[in-house]
Image 1: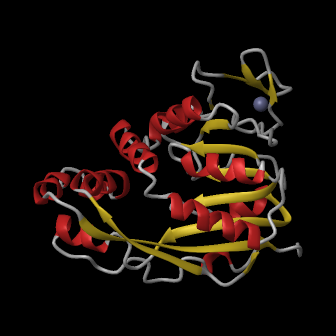
Image 2 (image 1 turned 90 degrees about the horizontal axis):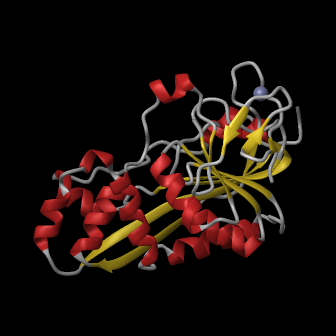
Length: 275
Ligand SMILES: [Zn+2]
């Protein structure tokens, strides 16, 4: 298991497996839920934190993965990791893992020592039930990650929040960071249908904020145009654009199969060895 850090304020000691879940040497303990995940949120996080993906969004995403819609993505992410020299057994954290399908597929392919982290209890619970061989954690990925300094070989941030300082802190020098962000025309047809317009996403260079502590390789753009049924288009909206919640009826009413563009920009960055 990767070296997790205690989230009690001012502690940060390494967590070790205990009978009930995880505990640090100072006696701070975190219970394992029946489905197998561990919740590391502190009371102040529970109060202030946006709870993340709803049960509805988690179910929609699960159906999309089960349909095979994202299979080409998982294949391309795997290729990007292989090209970047990620090794078998890499100690890996997926920050914003959602319901865990992508991490589970990559962990199997690369035999990763993997943990997935998300703020949504609904998402992490679904992940833990489906993939018990991976460590699943509910935690706040926006503030300090619950991981010891330099403890990781690989961090994944796949259409999730990005935190350059924290990603740099938890990766060892030479460790890899896989970033995936929506491409400019991602789901453009759906955004047009649901919101009346489809402005280009990702106008800024999404990877520039990593330039101080990471060496960058060429970013790739993965674009697939796929035919999807109305139910899947509604699921895509529910799963992806929170602002579009409630607009899915309009998409459902269209009926029939339509072409939808799925587009991601992906880069694998290397944690600099200096400083
Ligand atoms: Zn502690």
